[in-house]
Every structure is written in structure tokens, then in C-alpha cells.
Length: 253
Image 1 (cartoon, rainbow, N blue to C red):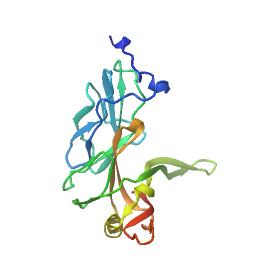
Image 2: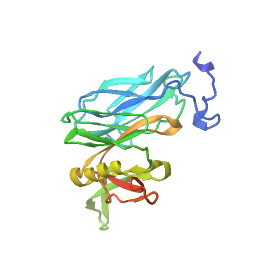
Image 3: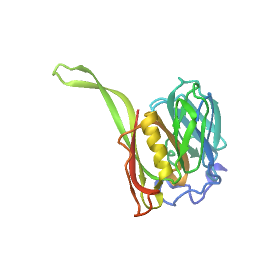
Image 4: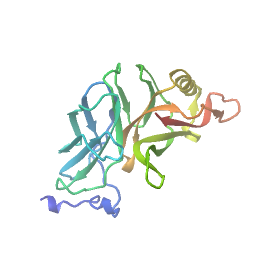
């Protein structure tokens, strides 16, 4: 009986008994699609009835274009929304088809554009750059960096009220992404050469990753970005120009 199913993770929402153990960890995912048949999969959770998965064009999920209750930790559906945009998705496990067994997962994202030449698939804990004009031109960073994400709400002026005050209309949310290469997360000269090539020649490019998130469960992420600053790194040690440390910031466009 579902009501009798008890294990060490049942009360994770309250943070009482630690992390629920996953039966399976998603091993690779498409981050960029060039066709509308989308497959999402995530880390499974023991002793649950189903998963609720939600997909939206908005980072705050104020409206959904797809929602489903599925028995397994994967779902396939047709994404019929406008091409050339980022999609956001999340999931949670449930014991009864309604109540959250755990809070929502980390929000992941994917990009769909039917004009792209190919798709981008990443393995767990990989970061990559890709050229939107030629998806075969992509580069994976050799050493997995630490990262920081800052969301910015962008507004536009709409009108003035009777007091002359500006009113604003919500426009969008964009990320600033900072990758830190320090210590074991150093960057190699080959990495820097590719990063500078994308910065100087492509200007606007995809930044994508499939990384561990909440409860060490990996989720895919993608941004269409430009470098916010010029890449600048320092040698880790004298005589080792091939090993560099520092950070670089990207701005979502």
C-alpha cells in the first residue's frame, strides 16, 4: 500500500532524514535539439509511484506548455513551441500522484532550433562551447570548473502614472555565468585558445553543461552567451605556461 511506504528519504521535504538514494543517475543528455522530438530523463528515486515533469518557456514557470505524470524517470514528447528558444524543465517524485515526495529538482534547460545542423549531447559533468552557425564546431573544456549563476530581471519602461513615476513591464530573466578555474579546476592552454577563438571569432555562442545539481543529481543547462569580459588567466606556476588559473564571465543574450 502506498500509504505504508516508508524509507530513509520519505521526509526529505522537511530535511529530516538526509538524501533519498537514487536507483539510477542520468548519464548523458541532449542539451541542444534540432528536431521537435524531445527526450528528458533524470535520476530515479526509490519507492515512489510516479514523477511529475514540467516544461516552460519561462524561468519562473508562470505557464507550462508541457506537463506529465510518468511512472519512470524519463519522458518523450513533441515540443511544438516556437523554434530558436530556450526551454526550462523540472521534476519531482510523488508517492500518490499529487503530493511532493521531495521538493522540485534543480531547474534544467535545453535549446530547440530546427535550423541547427546537429545536436549537442553531453555526459555528466561536462561543459562545452558550440557555434550556432556550425554546430559541428564545438569544444569541451578539459577540466570541470566550479561555477556561479546570477539571474538578472530585465525591465523596460512602459508608461508614466499620474504622479509622473515610471511603470515597468517584466521583460525577461537572463543569467550571468562565471566559471572559476582554480586549483584542480585549472584551464589548459588548449582550452584558453578555444575560448579566445569563440570570444573573438564567434562572439555569440552556446555555453552548455550537464552537471551535478541538488542532491548530486545532474541536470542539463544551456545559454546563448557572449563573454562579458576578455579572457584573462595567469600561470599556476613559473615554467608551466600550459596550466592557467582564473575566471571568466559570460552574459546571456
